[in-house]
Image (tube, helix red, strand yellow):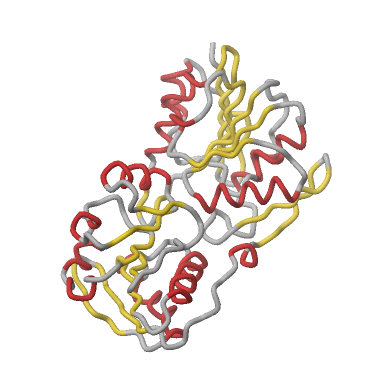
Length: 332
């Protein structure tokens, strides 16, 4: 059981009615709260929860349409995302209780201040290195419009400016990260055919590839619904057409690819997690055609080259700069 859920379950009297659990982990909290429903935007968590609690978890970027008596928000890593989901929930629950739970090292103490616009927050519990806060919504906000919270920036590319649209919670919200910037400088001589942007985020790489190589089929894949929603907005803003998939990991990607591009993530919440990237490096070769290329950018301190070499036999460093390396390997 996730420690945040354990803290909730220490206060069962607050959660007797219809409860919405926002950003919940894939544990047994729905089993322990039979009247609860979830709202999830992580495709892996959604799949795990749906397998156990079919029909009780809403997936996507919008608050579920059904009515609830109260809601619990599991503190997201991003302050902007926390602000969005708290306002979305509080707008739906005037005069009701909203709860915020999170780990101390995840910043729950400071995040509790985000409850102040709705009423007077109070700390209900502190245990398992977590805190549980509650507020009665006496000042219900206007329901936030997610598209209005998007940030836009423009990249100057050889083919013309690329407009990038990012939503709250998406990696590198409102700016281009250094790793992607380096990879954008080295998109030359890609194999023609089907290209996958793995861990696409706001769709920067996938959109840039589609702009440069318009005859290539491009697929963008990410585990996060806010990321794939951002990618669709980025593609639309540039008049580009590509497939966007929200799913957990490389197993959901198409086969017979010609290129896999990635600036792979290695952080999940407040914890470091390399699983998705290591899974990509181990299985990418199976998704590539003969002669197909894996091209990724990663922090220089991450020892990904030996993992790639185990599967591909050879791996070269295509470029290096600002603490990042671009690795390239081809299926023989």
